[in-house]
Length: 350
Length: 254
Image (cartoon, rainbow over the protein chains, first blue to last red):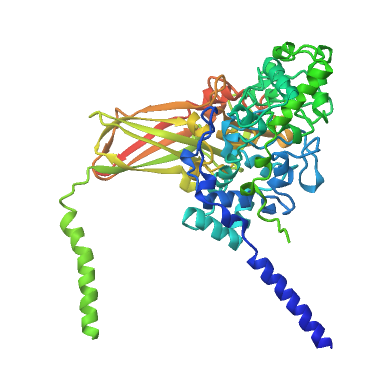
């Protein structure tokens, strides 16, 4: 009887192992077609092109695996995807400020990762000038991953999976910082969101409700000066009039340039997928889009030195705000949020 | 059987060797090598990290714990008009003896009457993503939060410095106006030209570290003990542009 039970247990374990190991590898489905870049219709030329980082399936898969692997953090507890969640357009949904290792809390709201190749700089303050060198920051930041690039490389070299992934991608066994960073850039660079209802509407493949149409019209006159289509940002740094949080005391762009007038200016974020990247503003102070519009529609809210473009907005009625919000929700790109090419390869749906 | 095997091996070796003999004399090499050596000094004394004490212009005593800098875009000006240019970067580090020797290959034969290079890293290379070799961010000469290379690091101690432990730390970089710290250095060799003639020539350069603290801007350790971003970086950059001089040129073919 006892032996019988043991056999059953062993068989069950055996079945489980077989099931796990023969489970379909999500990466296997990725083909060259999936990672071929073509500039979307109506979009400007990207600032980061893949000329010096030729796209390949193997490099993309390596980049994606690294993106989602805790190996990048000092105590192997967090990965890029911890704070950059795909279903939230790679922002951190419902988190005011960024979270990091050892339950530490940062000073800024996690920005969405989308259409990065059209940016000319990265971070809220634009301190990083190239997509490839951006990941160094979260990796070495003591309140994000608290790791060193040197140690990440040591860990990767010891890991047979990575030795093989690097070899597949680069045809030899060298694992260095350049390859690590370039692979990550293949993944993050291809996070492109261009299939929202707005995009379909613009290409006459979808219709808008009256409210959405009104919202778009209002948006074009009041918001598009900074949130310029089709990227919904003009890549500039501006003071959006919110009062300085004296506890965070974030000088924004000024810290990078050392120029006084740049203090308290931050990069204009894209509004694509804005519906699911709440809370809003560089410090996540507003929970809803209505709160954001309430701020912009009342000049008495503005801190001094606000950007003059804000004066174009003027007072918005509740109906107008509702219409703008209805329009903003058309920027949600469900195909992007659930695109399997970008999903976490470590997740097992058993 | 064994004999056939031996003959086979012999023939293979012969086949490998013969072309070397028969073709080398036909293709004439018209290129040579230049080896540049850097001698780091504080005025007339050889630099010794961590132990030796020196004095600056103001009579303040100091010691040095770290001294590294980037060089690149080496250009040799030839009398005949065919110049040599290499975009490559080198990280010269006092703590790493081998880094103080740079070898340039494939230099066309000729007489070279000046050498120029930049101290720093060109703006394009500051903006074009992840690099390897001398420009690998792992060399700790890279600012991640405000992307760009640190062109020169000079660190040490002085009793008059008001920083913790009497430290001073000058991390100089920046490729954008108004604080562009890239400096072009040109050294005249007309009196003692580098003559490349199929062989190796040697150029010994002196890097006088005290120039960084001296002119045109006298650095007072008690006032300026830390430069780690664009603020005041210009002051130091305008000083370091004069820190190189030619010690000797040796041409092997002479």
